[in-house]
Length: 256
Image 1 (cartoon, helix red, strand yellow):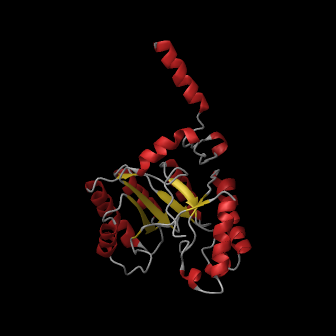
Image 2 (cartoon, one colour; image 1 turned 120 degrees about the horizontal axis):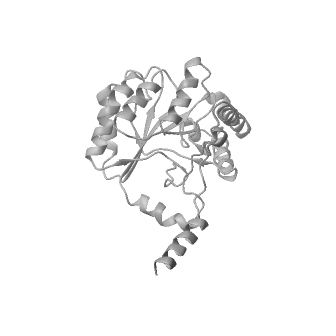
Image 3 (tube, rainbow, N blue to C red; image 1 turned 180 degrees about the vertical axis):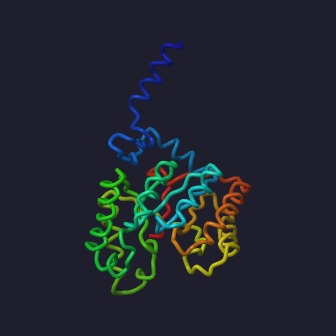
C-alpha cells in the first residue's frame, strides 16, 4: 500500500511543471507557466484574503527604506520598475531581488509622449527595459503594468484610444500579462498627499474586497508613502489578509 502511494506521488510530481520558479542559474529569474494540474492550487488562492502591495516607478532613493519595512513585517511585494540608470539604482534592483520580492515591467521612460505614441513605440520602450534588466541583473518577466494603468486618461481620447487598445491586444498576443489595481492609495497624485490620506485611502478601499491589489509609488519625492507603509501593513494584517507578490498564477486584475 505504502509503495503504491509512493509511486503515485512520484508520478504526480514528475508530471508537474514547477508552479513558481525563481532560478539562479546564470542569474536568470523566470516566472513559470502554470500547468493544468496546478489549477486547484490557483483556485484555492482565489478563496483567500490576499493583499498585493505594488510599487510603481522605482527604483528610487526610497527603495531601501521600503525594503527595510517589508522585511520587518515579513511581507513580499511587487515592484513595477522603470529604467533607472542612476548609480544607486543598481544596488536597489539587486536588493529587491535578494530580499525575495518580484520585479515586473512598467516602462523604461514613463514618458507618455514616447510610450503612447504608437504600439511600436510602446514595445520599443518596454523592450529597452527588458534588455537592461536581463543584461545587467538576469531578470526576466512577462508581467506588465502600463504607465497610468490600462484605463489611463489617454484611453478616453479619440486620437489615442486605438493606440492603447492596440497595445493591450499585442501584450496578450505576445504572451505578457498586464496588471492593474483595485485600490489606489492616492500617493502618486502629489508629494503633498499626507501620510494619513494614504492610509485612509487604503482602508476605505479594502471594504468587501477579498483580493486587494494596492497601488503605491516608489518615487524620490513620495516620502509619505514610506511613512504610511507600516500602518498599511498592520491594518491589513489585522483585517486577516496574507501578503503575496504577483506572479503568473495571480488572479488577473485588469481594467480592460
